[in-house]
Length: 484
Image (cartoon, rainbow, N blue to C red; front, side, top):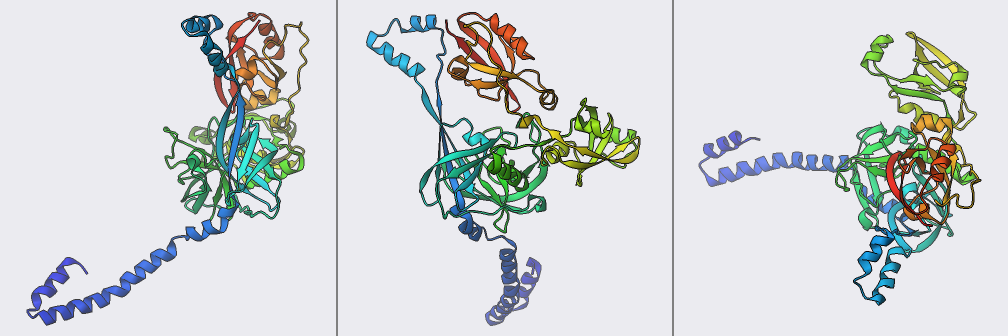
């Protein structure tokens, strides 16, 4: 009832009793509608309290500690000059503070997936850790053993020495729809076991810079994910895990309402392989590709832009052997529709080497079907350590290297050498890790092991030299301190 009818009623009745009687009748007429609206709103909203209560006991906090050896920011000569004005008894303390190993900690989230203590978290939470502790919801603390790490999917599988633990079940991430309610539980900023809800904003998102290998199609949500939420579960309303919280898109380091989760179907595949062998194998198609835009769709007589445009087929690759050609447009892979070119590596990566897969493509305006036997992705290759055959002064850098395969160069789009082993020395002090790709040394490109050896031989006996690396798809420059 609007303002005009009420005003009309008030002016039509002159007696107080008549007015009160009319208002009472109006309130009785309005009350059922208001109650009905309130009840319907309550029915439509999910009961997050029940969901949290049913699953919180399986959520854990991950504490990872790494030992790092800081390197001095000044040369020995400058450091001596700086210390001359200090008392002699102060100098050893400062030197110890500069060079003594230190503990660096990271806090993340995770969740139990079995009663016998298997825990999932993100690879980036525990990678390189010397000690990993897991705190349960009931405040018990366990040391965790790393079962396996997988950098391309950003998944780590840990094991606790315990039994009869609460755990959660995986759901089907393919069934998730944009607009569905989801709930995250984790430890943002160290605030343990916090819950946050939102909706699924998009599916199949590719996040640039996450990895050298584009094998992920994230679930995007507007859930408030922050630092410390990494590795925690993303639940649907049935209480099943449909994603693992992995990244946020932020200009401030805090939540901007754009977060990305690893689909549960990917996680189940990775976890099964990590349990079995401690490593993950992915299939390889062997093509270079790009998006199909409106112009390409017009040129190739397609009804709309879709699929992955084959820019090039790698020689002797599974795709080449199956008959895939340059300028083909792949629109389906083994029953999976390819809407965007980023869909293709995601689906290929879900199958193991040797799998026979059906490929549907468009060539010269006509559809064709091929069968391809997948090869082995570069992510499956164990680093082969190249023995240092140079004189005794060789390997002053404290690490060994191996060649990058041609597939790795094509997939990652980089030229360089892979760090196969890190030992005591300048490399470890600078923060280098096994698996880093070195693209230049002392400002000189090193596309092969022989090139790296030539540059290394010409390095000075002492001082600082530059080393440029690529780690998880992102380049960075570090300084190596060479000592005579």
